Image 1 (tube, rainbow, N blue to C red):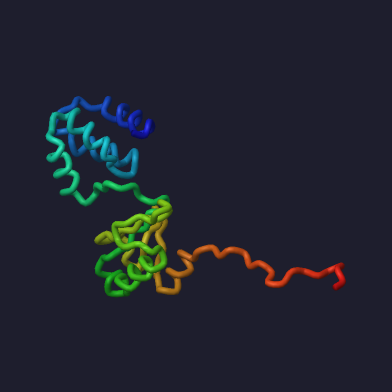
Image 2 (image 1 turned 30 degrees about the horizontal axis):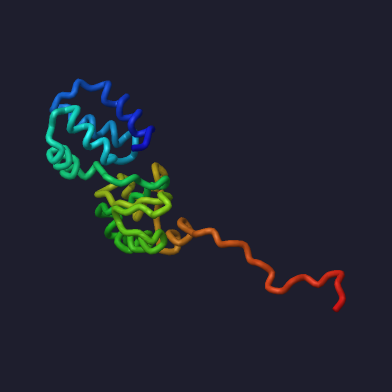
Length: 168
């Protein structure tokens, strides 16, 4: 197990008493620290609180806020609120999925991006919109999505070698 996870977990658990009613707070703190709930942490929480491991997983899977895989450096949240939906959020989500090559609730293999949807991000006047980490991108179109997630292209190599200063 990763030393950083072990040390971080030890620090987090030291601020709790190990009571069953602390379970959700412990899960929240661990996810806040690591961005997800590592499997090792789930086992350790069960032992620490005296709650069966299956119950710890049941609680964590019940709440949508918890995740079991790391999120990307750039966490993309597409709004599905009414205003965004009416103004094209389904198409925006489709374009983001196409550009990133992942579906909702997935993370790119390089851990650069993760994608999720939420009921509303509270920017109805700017719809349709999404957030990348905490930055709102507003009044989106498929074209804006393509520019927003544009992949850098490798530099073009000259197709023919230079013949300067050489004679044949």
